[in-house]
Length: 345
Image (cartoon, rainbow, N blue to C red; front, side, top):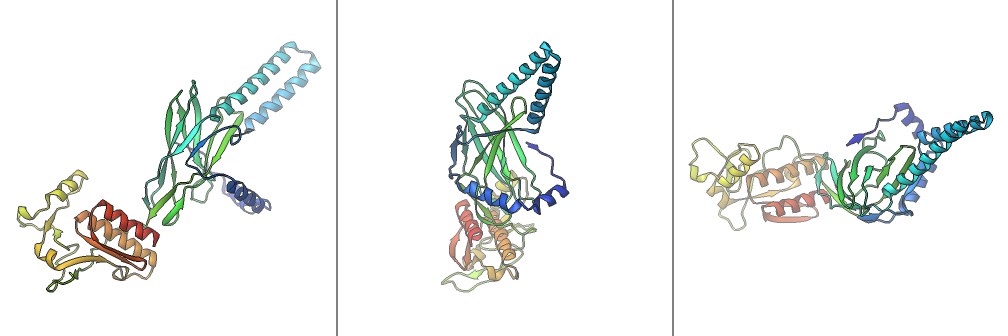
């Protein structure tokens, strides 16, 4: 992945307060609204654009100077050099435009991420042409969410009659369901004198879970089971609903070996033991009222960390939110359902 240089702060400030900035933003919104949302797009002459780069304008000026000098001094070799360079520039323009034209872009469904993590989009580029395509770059249009306007390009080559996959990262600023941002693809192959680009507006959406609280707080105390014969208070930090942290001296038959194997596979040494008495009397409910935090986002962050911790310990848990209640359960599907509810509440 290649990253272009960040613009100077003074240039960003002047661009922000430019009198043409509101008009430019309005034109961009109008232009983007005309783009059809689709997760698969084929680049044709209707959606691929081309303009000279700075180097291209300098080449044009050089050719003009060479032509004028050749005419004034009647230099046959000057004519030859001028038209040779001009012909190369014309061929380069055709090759540059053909590098994107006919390419198929397909966005794979993005996976959910936690707030603070970068969402990675996998984009598949497919070519049916008999020759390879070189120097193709993709990025989020307008740069990242850092406010600096920096564009992070991901470069790739597409083989002849083959495909290549590019990963483009985007960091959302809030939790919830987000539209995939506007993407752009461009190339300056082979001479760098022309810039060919396209704009792509995918239809997919990405879910961003709340940021888990770090370090994770202990699980809250349990509630009596419905119809149970009473309850006993939790016996320690993070202990609940049939499992608790391993204590030295616990019989080996009480160790949850399935969880132990999973912990060893992930590089941790967390062991948990069964607590049959607690399992019969307690059930774990995660409620924003138990978070004891004034900020709503902080409460969601704590609930997210509790969901992850309860799932890691293998306990059954339920989630109560103002929007609804998710019953007792465990497993990846139950965890995903709880995290989605926290992201969308």
